[in-house]
Image (cartoon, rainbow, N blue to C red; front, side):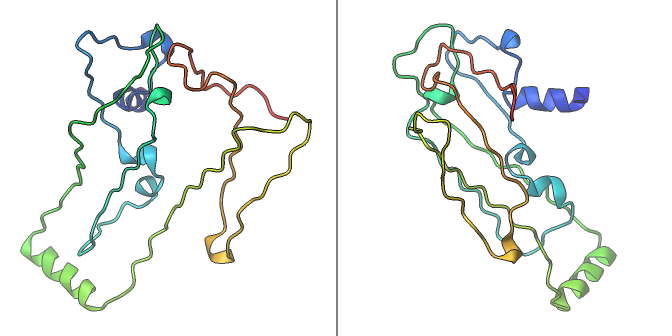
Length: 171
């Protein structure tokens, strides 16, 4: 990871556990680039014109898995006081604007890749060495590029237990 990427990840709240920030006033600010949340913003580097942009954030019922503290917090809460969505706007000179409008008048389709993230969680797995579950299938147009399988230990909903994000092993 480059030092610039490391600073960006630090601003997004991704820190080494020994470098956690401590707050006495109970508030903190973070800035999360959308490229960390959705891969679309990494790939598409062109201008989107006359398109409605919408960002929908869905929160979990509990904030317990979002916090880490030195002691057990009875009912941890995160209150969002302000959410900003910073989208760069480009101002064009008259000649470039005229060329751009001519391209728009041709009504050519602009292809955008759409990414969808699905989470399937089995909170109670069988106590056997084999498990069979269903996998969602899609048409060839929307075929998945990645399948990520993750295993979680039993420290869920515990704010005082460190949650290491290191990959241990897979067979």
